[in-house]
Amino acid sequence: MKKNNAFTLHWIFNLLVVLVSLASTATGFAQGGDYAVTDVKNGGTITGTISFTGKVPTPKQLVIDIDAEICAKTTKVNESLLVEAETKGVKNVVVSLKGINTGKDWSLPEKGLALFLNAPSTLQKDLDGGKTVPKSLQQMLKKNRVRIDAKATVSIEKDSSQWLITDKKNQQQYRVKKEGDQLNVYGLALNQNGCQFRPHVFVVPAARPFYVLNNDGIMHNLHTYSKANRAINKAQPRFMKALQMKSKDFKKPETIRIACDVHSWMKAWIVTTAHPYYAVTDAKGNFAIDRIPPGSYTLELWHERLGEQSQSVSIAAGGTTPVEATYTAPK
Image (tube, rainbow, N blue to C red; front, side, top):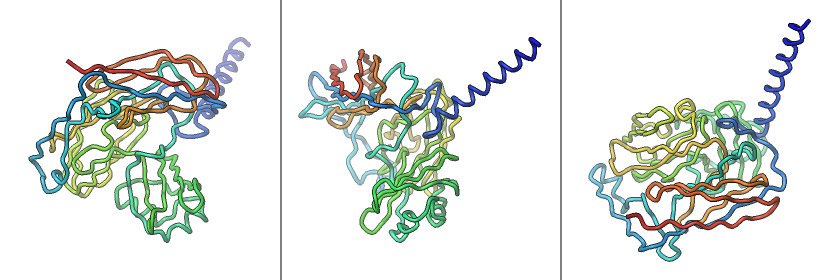
């Protein structure tokens, strides 16, 4: 009898674990680590500016000595420390909350997405009238080596001008925008354009596959330097516009340096995260993180040259918490 009771309790426990897991992913994709997605009601917002004290540094111009016909079309500078001269705001500071285990789901940002595809505007009727992605659009993405499931769904974000594609099988989302006489498909990806990584600091969920785009039409090579995750060293030939990075290669949260072995000046950072409460400061040092469950947290800052900082923050329901922090000039 005791054995049967133990078995029953074990079965009930396993069922509860499954139900919690399903509930945490019902609104979106699975998250990295122990983070669970919940409905955040009356959440708070953090806004702030990260500033610099001392003489504003002048970024050093880079020497472009390979593939100059493509790479030297524009002047390039060392991006490891960019400070806006007027406001003294620091760009590319990673701002995150520590100790948050439940909250909002990942969603595509309104700005900073990479262009995957230019499609004809004639496809609009299929987006408005259907629930799944038009086959013609699937085939166009496939030609660029972008995988998309036939059961991926389409929803309208803005009537007759913007749509959202959700591909749960491949754990990807894309935004389709009507711009002029085209439908442009955007997504979260690390882009190589003009022989530079864009963005310089790329935030992506841990254990989620993502794409690296090659819009230069020349050979690039992706080389990551990491500790928690295994290092990647892959060539991306000119014909391979999109290269999918596997989820197993970026399973753990970490700040990872990435470089191109073909073009030595190409350097950037991939930040894999366990939750979506991250932001990267803009050119004026500004950032915002919204839909935060009320409570007390530690706000962490990271910059590739200026290092790390932290401070305590309290988030009130429905309120906005202003934050300021300052970095001093490196010695």
